[in-house]
Length: 175
Image (cartoon, rainbow, N blue to C red):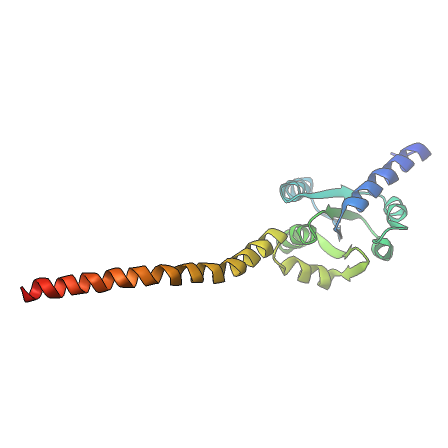
């Protein structure tokens, strides 16, 4: 069904809002996927905070022009599904893992603000840990010296108590 001019403008505005809020955009060709597979992909994407859209490429091109994702316009060819994500890694992870299981879904490329990636770049991005994992590792690294310091301080009275216990045992044995 063809869209009239107002509907196209509304769709471009809707996609422009998605682009403005996105930290990454990943595009994949979905030619040959059945409805059940696409439904599973959408469900998996929704659970990871990724918004998937099937758009006309001309409307998507117009939405990214003038944004930090403008370099992505060259990759918008063919029947594509667009993954928009506020987490820079989430869209790449969802689409790459789904593409490993379903050979009909082919990741074509993607972009982060002012940086366009090909399919290999997206696969490398998908192997990175998520923001939450990185923050957890950072907190564990920051807590390690403090924890060691606390254990060291705790060891002084514990050693004293063990020494007193050994003296008591020696006196009991002597008596």
